[in-house]
Length: 279
Ligand code: AG3
Image 1: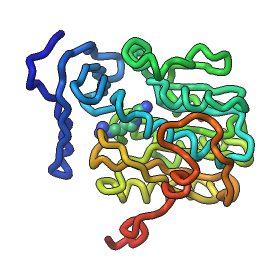
Image 2 (image 1 turned 135 degrees about the vertical axis):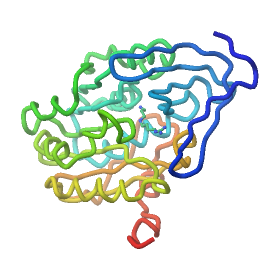
Image 3 (image 1 turned 60 degrees about the vertical axis):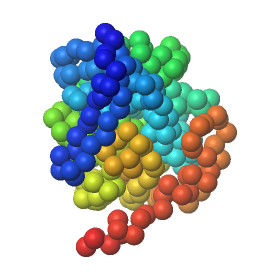
Image 4 (image 1 turned 30 degrees about the vertical axis):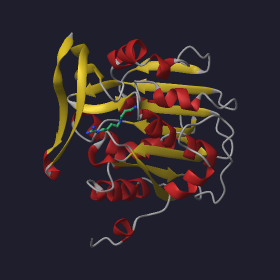
């Protein structure tokens, strides 16, 4: 449906007295799935926009930063990643990045909502270009139950590409869930989870890391990167290492748009206010 000019979508962040607006030109899709409200719009400046329950999940223009930072740093830190589990990530953006590595043997993407993948295939085909790779497996089921039932030491890397910690997704931020991930990971296994905005959600990031440590992980880290269409425009991913945190990482030898060796190092620098717990 073509929209009047001057029609804008606004995501309000009430806790922070702040909002972000994108100008829309067309509504491409709207449905209530079994799990959430799914909408896709054409914007005037950011390509296509996908919303879940009124929250921006991705735009064509800037999703590459998020998807690259959720995948490449951990793939380059693990000594020899072969088997990867993606929990959430139904738009297939992380899946595409992981499959860029020839050494990867199997990637299992487990998202609750099949309609997200349907919408991504239709409106963001560039993210789904590797969905038919024989190494990719897509399932639509509960990620928490899935990892709880997985055989131990099945995965080298687990990527949690979830929505904000509300509703169903809240369970993906618990110590219990991290414990199941720990068991599901092999000896050098690495868990990475999207961890919201450093500026707006510092306490969440710190508590995720302490829950990861309580679940048995040996060390944790946070990666910082810009994501201009998420709350505050500044985002993070938190990482938990089953073994020691590797001091080295492999140089990336695949094509990327944001990630490179210097970004790998820079993204790990902890801002001062994240270190001083009283600020
Ligand atoms: N996953 C993180 C979305 C969080 C955005 N939050 C918000 N807009 N309030 C996005 C999925 C991309 N694969």
